[in-house]
Length: 230
Image (cartoon, rainbow, N blue to C red; front, side):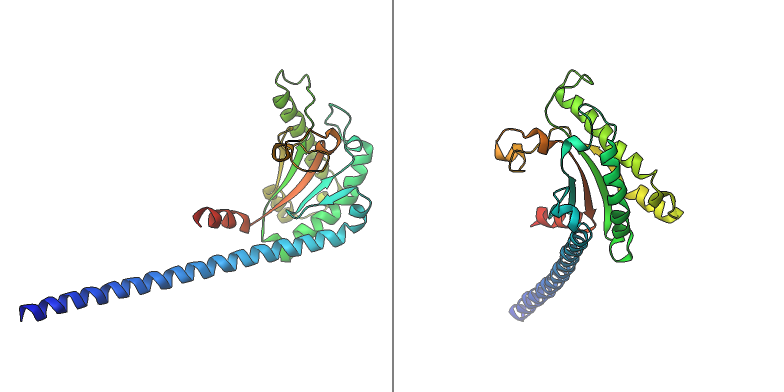
């Protein structure tokens, strides 16, 4: 009888473990399914945004004024037309480019099919490695210069009719999205357009001096967390 009771106890234990394992498996499958759905939405959103930006700015990218990256960055080329050397004041030519660019760009971002997936839009200023009198440390001096340039672009955007004619909810959304970021020459480019830190090549001054608009979508933090956990 004791052996029978012992066998029943072991059997009950195994049954309990199987039930626990089943719940763990179901929970894991549900988690994987949810993560997979989020990643699918992330990829689809980025693809749709890329296609829309590509269509809307086809002429500008074809002329070489803008470069659209797979990471949803839009880079203004021809550095000498953006700012004078050492200055954060927009040139008249760059102001004209922004007056054409920003209405189309903001309309795309505010469209109902995309806006709920966007968490940040970065205006990025990038410089070459030339020293400036803003600070004795060339990197810090260029951080200050690139930050001021990004801020000048953001300030100019808020003076345009496209912004002034928006309703309060739209303006609050842009306030939530837009940031101005100065990267100094930390992400400088070589003659092939690759990061010099990764390529080991010399800095190309003209390619490195640039302004970029970069869209950050909701799925990117989920993707980063997924990669870290797996």
